[in-house]
Length: 473
Image (tube, rainbow, N blue to C red):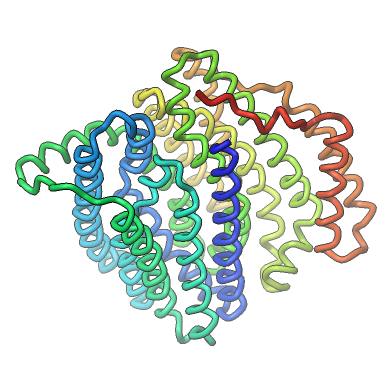
């Protein structure tokens, strides 16, 4: 089945790229001091927040439209659509980079941090030119896999080869830019080689009309995504202003581990968005059948990961970062719950996008942002990095609760709690198993624990062959 094939291709590509990016992060954390590591993550937070403006929901809407209409849209119309969206994103990237450059000059930070912010901002341009959303809509995950590997490998090699001490800190965002340029270039060349683009209308008035239509369609989802990114990156920026770069370093070290584990959320989301977009048009029964499958998969994946972090958090941080980052062990114990909650949240988000319910999406994100701001003001001054972690998890739980209530208006979508019991039983037994092996090698414990979990899950029939079958039309 194409969906299963794409899932594993994306899982492999995301896995390899995340492993390489994570190794790059670990290398930098060890080469740089905690304070220097905090600086690059503080600067990167500005870039990550800015990058969402070049998206503005356009990627989700673009993927949805390509998936829903790739059969019915004439080749010329499809090519024109792609050109319109690319040119719009590039224009937005130019404006955002200008604004980011101005902001970097006026914020109360050192010249070094200001420079890092601008250098990271250069990557807005290759990201705006990436055609990953097109290949997602076509469900051609193999090309996406190649692009991600090109990006991750180049960034990893450039970093470990040319970054040897903290004095080379300014090279890091430049290497990030070059690697993203290579990844975007690969997809662009691949597209041009396999798709003979017909004559495109370059009349500015026509483009302006198309741009306005794209923005009108995507903006509500873009605002929601903007609010999500604001929450994620505001936590880091606010922590840096209220506390210091060292606190940012501890928080970022934990969050990088979480980001690595979030590969499963991204893969599930990217794989299912095109499918859910089609199922949403085929009736509620088919849609709920698919959601039930995804719901079960989330519990099967999320619970053992949470168990590993809760039991082995200290060993995990020591193994990855060393003793200087031990405080991050306490933070990752809180952050790990974000993984499971946001994976459940992704189901509701994807369905809302597929059914074009902008109002539900945007109002929920705004309410989540308000909660984030209030909690940050209360908890971060008191608890520092730990407070930031608590804020993030609490906000995501509030958003999940709101989605659960609001989506009942448009569908019978729900969380299938019956899918929780068997994975929870297997994960609980796995937790006891890990405590019994606590004196053994850290990596060995994880490997044996995952095999134990899978074995228990199979024995109690918590996972069967039917779980891998999706009835596509």
